[in-house]
Length: 220
Image: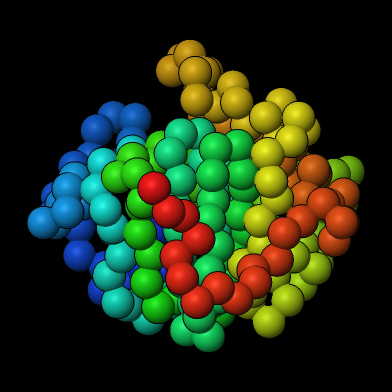
């Protein structure tokens, strides 16, 4: 299997300023630091078109105003804490423990975001739709995963979609947080395909679409 060599995160988030970037034998570490606190993203290359990031943010916000490129799906899962974001039309949503969100980067008009508890731990899967589809078709043809169909169904008009905590999500994702480093790559690839298979089955009744709030969703 051909592994990913392109830095999807940096390409799609062009213009985002990281405080530090460090490359190790296993991953690339991005550091985020601002007056509200400190954060870190540990990014692993999976198969071509897919990157996995473990996020540990101890800050009030990691938001920077940029114009991200399109063509990439971002799947986020929250393990601990919560994350609130606001769109330009004043729609807000809160991603809490066990929740998963799916967005098409570059199509969602973000205005701001915050971490109300100043603590967010989770993971993100970045999928370059065109390149990842070629990999899936080549190595997992019987999975019948259509990334464009998933995008069109879950991210209509670019709107983010949230699936609240449920057993199926926990089953698919939970082991990614404690997988032995010796099998991390192969296991993460397997779990990513399993998650995409799960998203193939998600129906509107399983999801929570953003609704408008005039005030922050989370209040201490």
